[in-house]
Length: 86
Image (cartoon, rainbow, N blue to C red; front, side, top):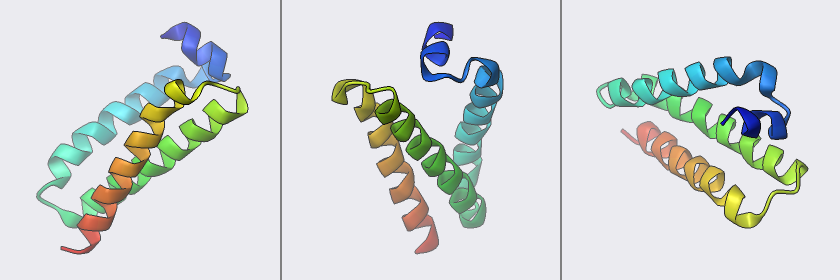
C-alpha cells in the first residue's frame, strides 16, 4: 500500500489520509443515529473520493482501478442525500 501512495504522489500524507478514512468510517456508524453527523461525514467522504477519482485520472490509471473510488463517491453522495431527507 505504501507504493500506491507513492504512485499517487501522497507518500507524505498517507498516515493522515488513513486516519481520516478510519475516523470517517467510524463516524458513518455513529452517524446512523444523528442525521447532522451523518451528513457531515458522508459529505467529507464524498469529497475525499472525488479527489481520489481526480488523482486516478491525473496519473492516467485504468478505469478498473478508478471504479472503486467512483463507487464510493456515489455511495457517500447517496448517504449524504438521504441524510438530508430525514
